[in-house]
Length: 320
Image 1 (cartoon, rainbow, N blue to C red):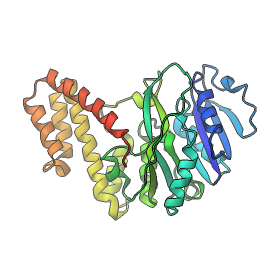
Image 2 (cartoon, rainbow, N blue to C red; image 1 turned 180 degrees about the vertical axis):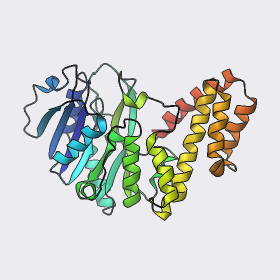
Image 3 (cartoon, one colour; image 1 turned 120 degrees about the vertical axis):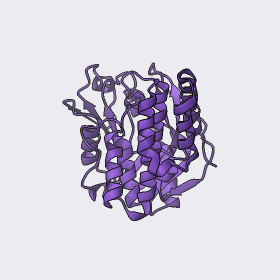
Image 4 (cartoon, helix red, strand yellow; image 1 turned 30 degrees about the vertical axis):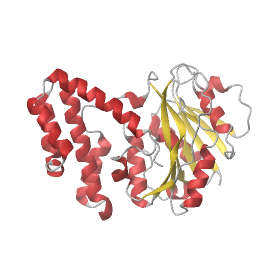
């Protein structure tokens, strides 16, 4: 298997050398590593001046956004699989080998992935290899439904078959920087199964200044607006339409809880009304309605913060 690794870089000069090192030191050697500096103002690509490995290609461009940057990397890739790695994240040395194991177990999958772990390490210090117990490969037929259990992958733990990418009319939607990755994974999941190794073979840094993952919008992101419309107009395959509508409704309930944490009861009730067609008989929807009607604002805020912390920990627990 020939893996092309695409690393979008924007103002992550402290971290990018570590990301590239983690890509190059795989037990299953990568075919190439493509770093695209998206107009960094902190000398991003200069941090790689010492890298002489011929497998590394460094491209500089004017700032165009993360989606356009990843798309350029896809277009440049010459491997038969395209893997993605954010410039402040890192692979375990066995990451590509784990993807190869997923491919061997589920050759019909066009998306290969592993679980991931999150660490608070904003300084750019190297990440030592971490233990990865042997875990089973899971074939995911409905990615949205699986996502509601816990997030099985992230942008730094995914590889996509290049042939599948070349069949798509749209890769990452340009001009968007929140949910553009989920939009891509769900559209791919509508076309073919996803194989996930249920062990953490990638590390995501949290609390890094400028990280897009730290942004929490208080309205529906564009990809969910599209998902809702596509489920209604039949663009999403029939077998996945119910889960798509359910996924959107669950996000609307989450927006209601975010509104409650900010003391916005009327806004919370608005989101609950939007989610009502899919949520009336759901315990989570009912509990949020009770919170909106009866729970003091301060208590709702503390409860929401605790729930988000607990959900982040749960999402990273490997499934045996």
